[in-house]
Length: 196
Image (cartoon, rainbow, N blue to C red; front, top):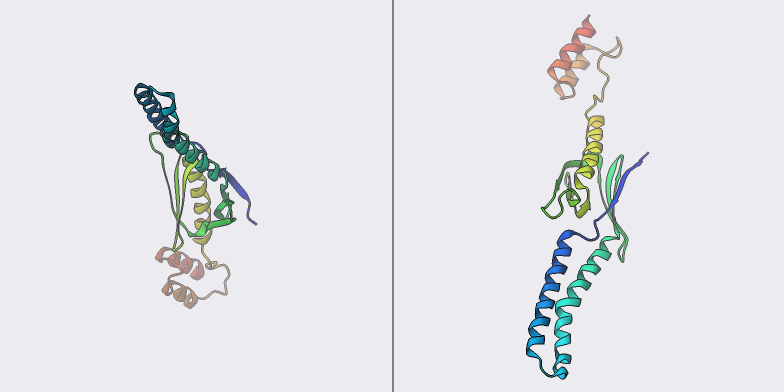
């Protein structure tokens, strides 16, 4: 049975977005100062307002819209899988089973250090799940690595109980070694135990 270990959302407002807003506010302020020095007639001001809205309102609206869209994306780490669920317009999900996880990487930029960053989970033959900006990517990466390690420990456990009873013969051990089910050390130990 699968249990939910961690659930997190994307960071909605990043420092990079704040820098973009400040940049466009500075442009709007400089345009206003430049225009106010040029305009003598108040009737000319009505021609300038649409220009200022392009430099001021549109970028802020775009940042707020992208921040709002991020609220619909959730990362869930279960004991047996990693799943990203997006609920914007159409509900869809992407998942990678824990046994298929090949690598888990994270990165943090200078602006996002210690708060948010990018998380990449690569699966065998399944592509990758890339989430940015995700809250505390280092902690999330450790949790995902933990479920991947537990899953690989389960699959790498010996499938056959070697020399569990006296009825197992030496020929069965040789066949298991030839098929690659036993290493040389395991074969030697099982043979010693079987032969006494």
